[in-house]
Structures are given as structure tokens and as C-alpha cells.
Image 1 (cartoon, one colour):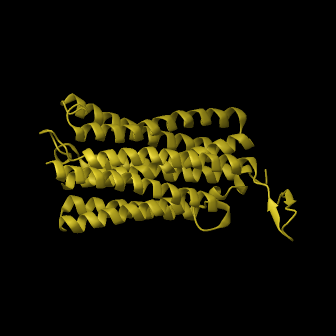
Image 2 (image 1 turned 90 degrees about the horizontal axis):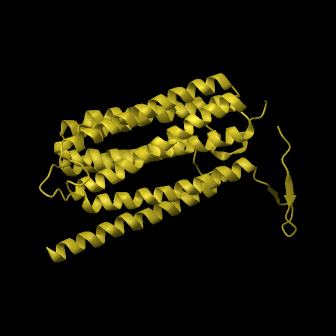
Image 3 (image 1 turned 30 degrees about the horizontal axis):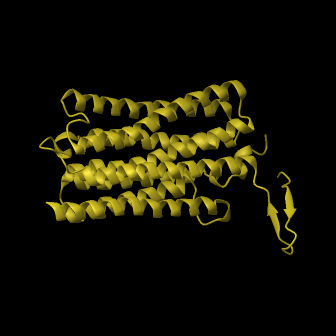
Length: 108
Length: 206
């Protein structure tokens, strides 16, 4: 078939380059936090900041190179749904931690 | 290129709206499901965030986790996710044999991850560090186990799709299902990044 059925979906625009780029970037972004924690050369706070940054960047790399999310119109609603979900997640995780740690300090 | 069906909205001048294809609708619907799944993982991460430091006098993450082992699991899942990307390229090119081979590789890598996780869980429970040991371990097994269960169901789905590709060929519905399975697979790798960072890396640091 000359035109594949999935060609018209915004999320199937991957190319060999995009998958390999995403893969290599993910390897690097896994190796950096792993090496930092294993070696323990940085302070606790600096290591924590570094592994969280690497994690967030790697999630963005996956979303962009593997799931092909960007600002183009054919995946706009996927991005909108994702951003809304991130908002809900921030409420769940942030809210739970806030309330429970407050309770912890008040009652201990 | 195929001709696209267009309809004109009466009120807007010169503005045409393209009908989304069935596959586009299915893909978007599945994306909404994945978002709801993400909410489940958010609640489990929140639970782990609250309970993850309550060891009840038992072992901590530092005592239990072997980061090199976890790195092995991470590699299985990452290579598997990238491999599925290449499978989708073969799907688009209509290369059935390559799709089947790629799916087999992706499946084996995913299976490697699940077996490593089962082995890790078995070792923990055998040493008395099961989910009943402490709040930390309860929330650990719930979070990591839910992810592992997702991967396991992904493997069942993948086995089903291998059979469908072999029997039905790369028909439009089969392509659509492969598309959604690839999204599921990439999604599970993204959740694993969170688990690797928050549960394992942070657990060993404390």
C-alpha cells in the first residue's frame, strides 16, 4: 500500500532519526543521575536537583521523540489533555505531601 | 495522496474542517485513557511520597535496592520502547516480516524487564521484606507492582498483536491497534523514569 492507514495520525510521525536521537538522549539522561548517585561526589541537595532535572528532561525527550508531541495542530488536543493531567497530578501529589507533612509536624 | 473528505461549516467563510479519520479518533481516545492511567500513577506516587520514609524499624531503600540491578531493568524497558518505535516505522512501510521480528524483540526485552522485577520482588518477600513489613514497603510494592502489572498486560497485548499481524496482515484496524500499543509502551517507559528517579535513586540517597 502506498499510503499507510496510520499516516494521518499526528502521533505516528516518527523517523529513524527521531527514535535514535530519543534513545541516545535517554541513555545519557539515565547515565548521569545513576553516576551521580553511585559516586556520591555531589552534596545531597545538588544530587537531588540533578536527578530530578534529568528525570524531567528525559520525560520531555520521550514525549517529543517517542510520542511526537509538539505544538503542531494535529496533536494539539493531546498536548492540552496532557497539560491538564499534569495540573491534576500536581494537585494530587503536591496537595497530599503538603497536608500530610503539615499533619505530621502538628501531631508529632 | 488520498483525497481528504471535507465539509464546510456554514457560518465561517472559506473555512473547511477536515473529518478526523477513525484511527485518529481511536488514537485520541486511547490517549485520554492513558491520561486517566497517569492519574492512577499520580495517586500512587503521592502515597509513596507520604509513606515512603516510614520504615517501621525495618530496612530502608538504601538497605534493599541494588542500583546496578535497577539500571538493568531500566535498560530493558528503554531499549524495548525504542525498538517499538522502529516497529512502527516498519508498520508504516508495510513490511510485515520486519514488524513481526521487531515485535518479537520488543516482547523479549519487555519480558526481561518483568522477569527481573519478579525476581527482585521474590527476593524481597523471601527475606521477610514483603509489603506487610512497613508503610514504605507497602507503598513500594503497590507503585512498582502496578507498573509491572501494566507491562505484563502490555506483553499479553503484544502477543495478541503478533498473532493478528501474522494471521490478518497489516490491515487498517491492526495498524490502529499497533499504534495504540506503541503509545501504551512508550507511556509505561515514561512512568518508569519517575519510579527510577523517585523510588530507586532517591531511595538509595537517603
